[in-house]
Length: 89
Image 1 (cartoon, rainbow, N blue to C red):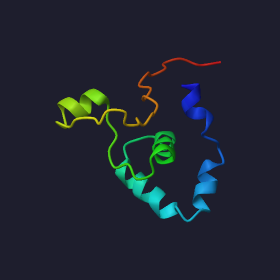
Image 2: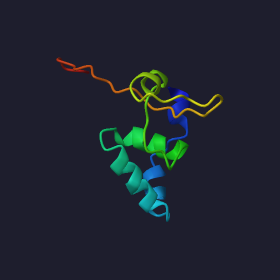
Image 3: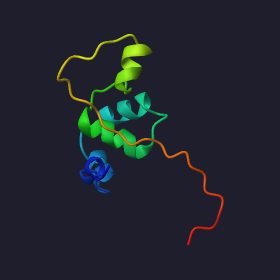
Image 4: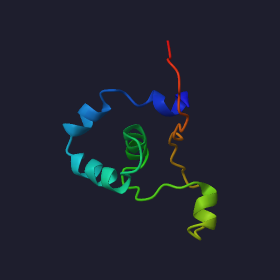
């Protein structure tokens, strides 16, 4: 997990907003509106023109697609669905 987020700086969003790729980023946000901000940035940094993200099995079974050998994967963080019910100190 550390390898994935190492290249993601806090300044990335500010740098992106001042760059001309802002429209491309807005397109990525519209494609992945159910993903977290961090995952949208990770997807955009790895493959700016991505339109769908799914696991290997999901592409194969649900979308009936095959993966090209040696193709590059997009790495994102899994959502944390754990609910804390106490005070964290």
